Length: 320
View 1 (cartoon, rainbow, N blue to C red):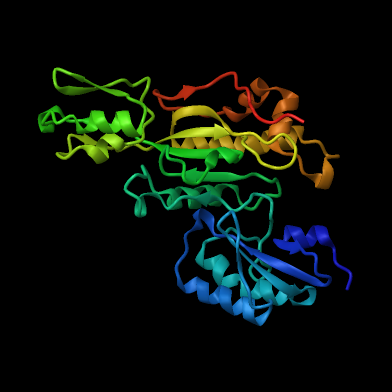
View 2 (view 1 turned 60 degrees about the vertical axis):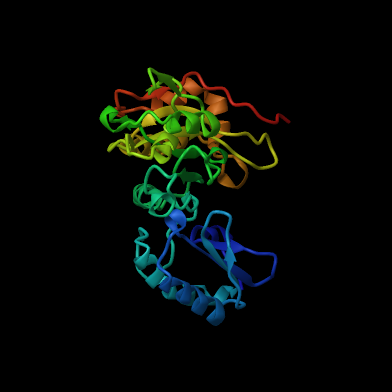
């Protein structure tokens, strides 16, 4: 059976080492889904695949052992998952319309974790609606706090939750618990002054350890949600590196605008002769220079007053 592998991959099926067989990739934005969809995945795997399911490193699912000729049936069977997870689609019954932007990953967030500063799943789903489908290979990851359980610095865009701690002096009992927690678990942004904590805004990383440690709710999280945005981490065999801080205390709207602006930047500068038609964003930035990237990324972006933009940026890592 002749197969257009480019079209197959665009439809979110994988080219596998087993002749005549493919694998279906299932998007799960934010890594969170209703348990009822696990039964749907099982049914597809047992009906069309080899009866197994792989949980990918990006929190999606992959169903291997699907014969090429069964792909149209699998696409129809996937529709309830696509609808249920609210995935953008060109036409019902035809599966996923792109495989470029990788599944958006996230830690469990504040739906479960007391350390998380925001709902990572909800923000991941919002980003999904803004960026998918797209054929460019962006990797986006979210984590709820600076603990960075999701390892966001290994992605093109790393989104780390922050909070501006709010202090209500009348509730403080001068126990010093917040100062101790900040010293042991964070960055010593709090110091005691006349038996009351004083916050150094320049040092504070917005982790919320003071909020968790206070026995009397003198410290609370800010109503407004803020983030640390890191850029252009990558793995792979050629020059792996961690992402660097780009903006501290940035808001959700600005992050989405920056990501969308980066799509425009990549379309303008990507090397059409790159292997497989793919070129990592980081290599493009290396070629054009960071200031040119920043000019595109911050186009029509209105940052919060407290935002701090790091410039210029230099990436450290292995060099081959």
